[in-house]
Amino acid sequence: MKFRDILKIITGITLIIIGIIGGLVPIFQGWVFGVAGLTILAQYSKLIKKCLEKIKRKFNFDNNYN
Image (spheres, rainbow, N blue to C red):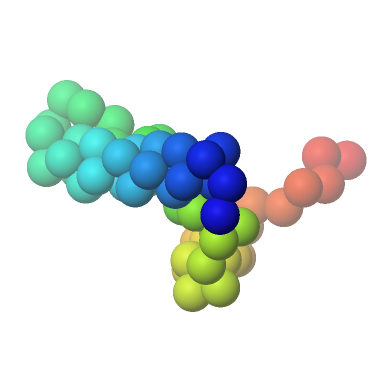
C-alpha cells in the first residue's frame, strides 16, 4: 500500500468515528461524516461497498439528475 492509500483509510475511519459521535450528540449531524467515511473506504472493502450500495437503494440515491 502507498502512503496515500493509508492516509485515505485513516481519514475514512476518522470520519466514521466522527459520524458515530455525531449520532449521539443531538445538535451535530453525524450522518454526513459517516457517509463520507463509507464513501472513502468503499474503494478498499467489498463489505463497505455493499453497505453503501444498500444505503443508496434504501434512500433512492442515484447518479442521474435528469
